[in-house]
Length: 296
Image (cartoon, rainbow, N blue to C red; front, side, top):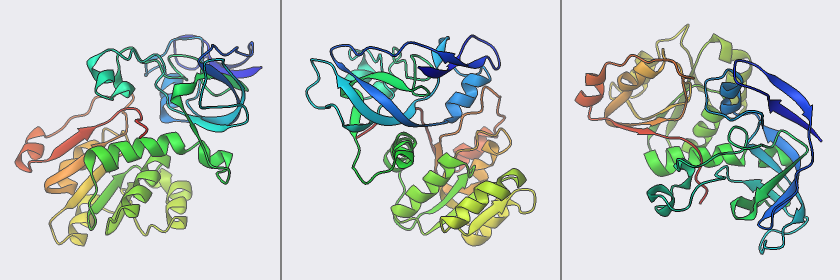
């Protein structure tokens, strides 16, 4: 089968390889891949600034149809349309696994960087990490289930958005747009998206198609002044940091009200960030860092 492989350490080294079709173990199923998203993690692996074990097939936002189920599989069956949790190799014994946090187990090796992923024609995957999808869901929609689960976990469950909150999203890429939609879905009164000139043609256009009107281009408008004017000088209740930009991240305390909440999603790719730490303290801010997905 064809597969997109990070072949060795270093920047680049991504090739299309011919590899063997995997054979499922007793507790696994064989999935024919229908769609696979490109995550920021895949980009970081390409640029050699995220952990990975080459040679490895990229991709963890995948969906497809079960072709074969191992003899110990009891729930997922041939013909099922599924998406996957990226928590393979979690030990199941450490304090994190035993408290329901398998997504950050030190032994975890997710598809796409720790084990072979979904940018291939087929993949074998543990039954316990699979979820059926409804018949009406398209393959493209299903491929977005994993990143949506990230935002539900990071923003709605861990950080929290209350009805009537004023929410700011830094970075209007796919994850930022999902965060904006999630905040609106649970009752945010306003959602402001902050981006750069490079976001105007595609990302801001998509945001407008999704019904968002408060779009701030940092090259033309001061984001802090814009938010303060909209909130009567109070500041935002929640900032969702999806940009991973060392220039945007220090703006978080200026955008937030006192006792506001920051949801950190974006990765910098190893770049250092300089912060005025006292600003966070003097506003008594809550800052929630996040990594990976937890399906509920």
